[in-house]
Image (cartoon, rainbow, N blue to C red; front, side):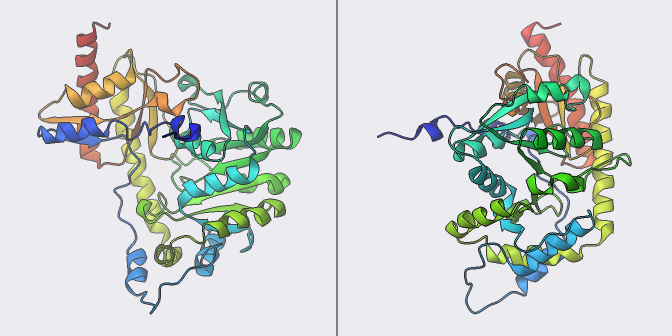
Length: 400
């Protein structure tokens, strides 16, 4: 029996592909610190669960395809503090940020069309694009530059007559980079000059550190008709399992046509939307405490990396990830080694090889992505284990 080329060409997630090695380590009694996945350990606000517990309709009916009105309005109210007012016909509730991206790609792209994005990028962007018969075309950013954007000339050199949009994650998953106002302005100018959409995945916008000012695409008023904002409650409210996201645009043609896809999949889950709508009253103190905690963890991981000879990693300014270049020959082999062969005092760690966050073959081979979503004491221990593991791996491979 034959399967589609689309599915055969799709990759497994580099974030989860080493899970069997981790499972085997745990079966041997080894404690594993999971730095491979961005699963927050911060408590979900109780308002989410309270709303669901109090929701007892006689019949759990289909919801509106564009989303529950109360939830749409809560998102709309949230964006007002970022200086933009959407209407209910401009903002749509989705099954997480993932579906929001798949829908956007499907609206914008014909088979073979291209979406430009800085690499490394969130690995699932590839799979989302493939579901729309499109492809991600990368332009390179480097660890030595803090993964900030290259020049306009470098970016535009990758544009072809099949390019439909530029896609960024800001703050970035996997690098934690926060793009400057100047970088956003450059992308806006490119979008206008080449008649492209600009898609910004801003699910980490609440997590920007060191007093840095975050610039959203919502500030780009001169290209409002070509911006598409992707969002989610997963990280902001530590509610990954709810699978509630949104896609918003002020382009009337985009909004008219995305409704076809929204109606085809009927609606987002109703119970979770009830819970998500209640999150609008979450106090600012929740975000302030969460951001302070993540910044402290960021500092721990950077202090640990700075002590390891040969590591290249500039301090990231947002999200809760770092991409570090290690003094190893193969990051995936190193990650397997940590799970299958190495432990210190009965403990080891799991990281995500960064090669899976690149499109260009060979790039990221000596890099890993780590998420700092475990508590501070565990993170200190994990960084010590990482240093010892690198030393043991280099000795095994005869690396200097």
